[in-house]
Length: 202
Image (cartoon, rainbow, N blue to C red; front, side):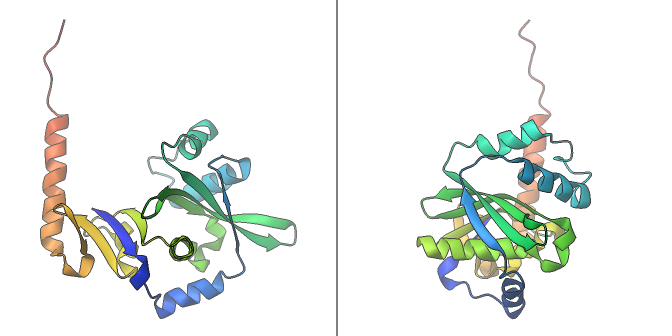
C-alpha cells in the first residue's frame, strides 16, 4: 500500500525532535537530477554495509546514473553535507520527485558510518520541512507493507495515510489484518498471471 505523511497535522515525537537536533549541523542542498561520483561512492558504501544481498547490490555507475537522471517527472537530488577536518563530506542523499500535492521520496541512502545519527529518519523529517516550506500537504514514502519489519519505521510518522481499497485512509483506521490479507491476495494473483504460458505464435 502506498503511504504518505499528512504534513499539516504532523508533530514530531520527542525522539524525532532529538534526531532533528542531532543532525542540525547538516547542510541541505537541492540540485537537478544529475549523478555524481560522490553520490555513487556513498551509494556503494551504503549498499555494501546494509543491503549487500539486495536487488541493487550489483548496480554499476551507469545504472546508478540512469536511476538518478532518467526520470519522467520533475525530480531533485537532495543532498546533506557535513563539515569535516578535510572539508565538506556527503552524508546522505535522497532522490525526490516533485508532485502537485507533495514530495515523493523515491530512494535515499546515507553514510553507514553515521548510522547512530538516524539519518534515514532525519531525511524523512527534513522532507516534511521541505513540503511545509513549499506549501505542499503530503510527503509520500513509497510502499508500506503490513507486517514488514523493514517498513515498520514508516508507521512512526503520524498521521500516516495509506491507500487501500481505492482511497486514502488514516493508518489508525485501517484493519491491519484485513489489509495484510488483501496485499497477500493481490500478490498471489500477480504470481498466477506471471505463470501463465502464452501459446507460441510460430
